[in-house]
Amino acid sequence: EAGVAQSPRYKIIEKRQSVAFWCNPISGHATLYWYQQILGQGPKLLIQFQNNGVVDDSQLPKDRFSAERLKGVDSTLKIQPAKLEDSAVYLCASSFSAGPGNTIYFGEGSWLTVV
Amino acid sequence: TQLLEQSPQFLSIQEGENLTVYCNSSSVFSSLQWYRQEPGEGPVLLVTVVTGGEVKKLKRLTFQFGDARKDSSLHITAAQPGDTGLYLCAGQNTGGFKTIFGAGTRLFVKA
Image (cartoon, rainbow over all chains, first blue to last red; front, side, top):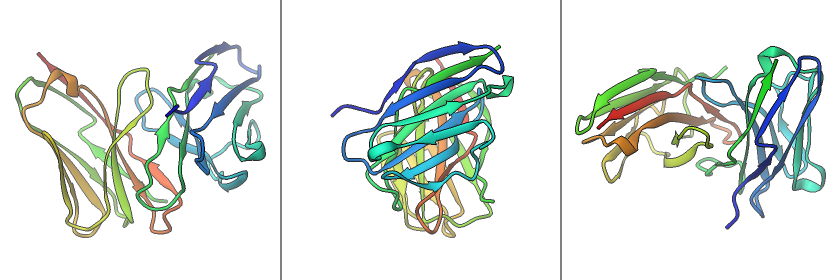
């Protein structure tokens, strides 16, 4: 079974530039998550989709971050304009559903460095 | 806001030693999971516990969910260098739709 695919794997941009990350979840998984993981910290949920609807985006900095999941499959996360503090690993994950005890499967992450 | 606090933050031990890491919260969770993350990779699920007081064993790893479903522990017996990694606990709220992660315990096992 193919895992969660993410691209690009690494990205270096200057502050105030924009960047987009792409995620293809495991086939059949209705729930898709974007997490931000800053070095030395645990993953922080940015946004959670159930099919193509947003379940939780309470920690998404909406003035600069946006995400969409068209057709309930692939998803993109965009940052514009980027700040130095956005340097982190952006983890996409998916699960069959969002119920208790569901296994969340993570991609390898997209590493962003803002200089 | 639900928070999960993990301790210790960092642990460096010799091969063969035993260790316990903790995950605590003031909130009740419907289930709690432990993940392990290796450098350059995403977290991978180790175990899910759903019942207060539940104990699960996975080879040399023993996981326990507190009676009140607010805390959990992970005990590793006879640690090996392959156990090195970041151990994350993740709690799912009583509605079951949101999973939050602790900051993790970074374990280094020296040969």
